[in-house]
Image (cartoon, rainbow, N blue to C red; front, side, top):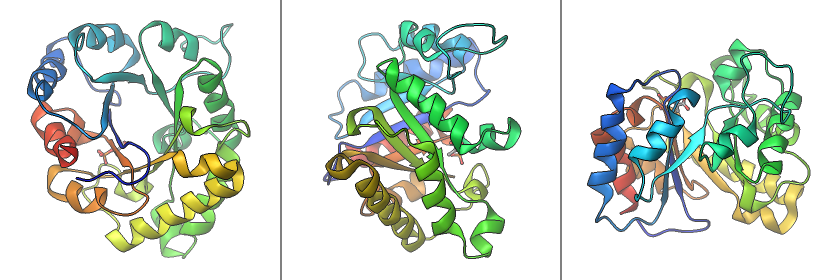
Length: 252
Ligand code: PEP
C-alpha cells in the first residue's frame, strides 16, 4: 500500500495475554518479516513482565516493543504500578495510555490519561493515546463530540508529532468482531486530524492516527487505505503471528 502522510504503525496490544510458551509467536513473526520490505513500523506491546523476553526474542528484527500502561510519576510509593522510565529501560519505545479497558476498569479520566501521556513523552517515548466512543454514545449521535472532548482532555499541551500517536478505538468494536463502516472511520479520523491541527498547529499533520477495534486480515486492507488512517492498534489478532502478519502485510 502506498503511504500517504506519516509513516504508518501497526501495533499489537497483547493485553493480559502471553506466557513464556507464547514467545514463539514474536519469534515466528520476526522470521516471517525478515525479508519483507515494509512501508510501516511494527510494534508489539506484551504484558510488562514479558517485555524483556520479547525484546530478546526480537533482537536483530525491525519489530519494536511497547508497554501497555504506566503511572504518571517516575518513581515512588505506587504498589503494583510501573513507570515510563522503567518501561524505557526494559527496551520500550512507546506506551499505550488511555485504553478503554483502563478507562472503564480503572476509572481513568482524560486528565489522568494526559498525565500518563506526559510522563511517557518526558521519558523520551511515544505516547499511544487511545480515545473512542461507547455504543450508547454512538447511538445517541455523540461520537464526534465525545472524541473531540477526549482528544482535547487527553493530549498533553506540549505534545509533538514525534512523541504522539492517537488510536481511535470505538469501545463497542474492541474484541467484538464489529467495526464501524469505512465512512464512519474516515469521518472520525478527519475530525481527529482537524482537532490535532487546532491543538498542535503544523505538527498535527504528522501525528499518526491509528484505527483499532476488531482489525483482522480480512478488513485491514479497506480500513488502512482510508484517508487519515495511519495504521492500526490490534488486540486479538496480534496474538498469533500468522494473523498479525496478515494485517502487517497490507503495508508490504
Ligand atoms: C484493543 O484492545 O486495542 C483492540 C483493538 O482489540 P481487538 O483488536 O481485539 O478488537
